[in-house]
Image (cartoon, rainbow, N blue to C red; front, top):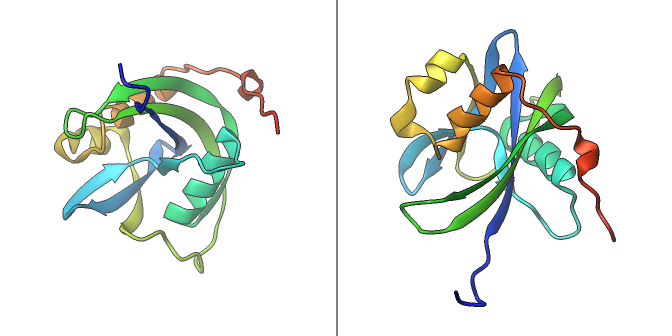
Length: 150
């Protein structure tokens, strides 16, 4: 194994409101795909703060992180890139209609679990539906499992 191998650290937020999940439609290399609000950890940022930031930047929603659903590893069969994904459950607090969404984001949309499942061919990764199902089934870990040393 090469010492150059570096997994990508990502975060995602499962935000549920009345049986609907906050999802993002985005343009990835000309393909319209569906994902949770998600993105990469930035320097000096905690995983929780990254999930809060990414959700605002991609949807315009301010959220509160409630707990960790799961920490997952996944290798994309398309790019062979390896991802470490912290997926959090969150509560929607308020919407900012003035928020400019990140480049490539088409729109934020609330979808039921069945609506997400009906779009399997458009999901960014299999982790999207996997984490919704874990959330529905009550999988959770307190976020104090994470620590950040500056």
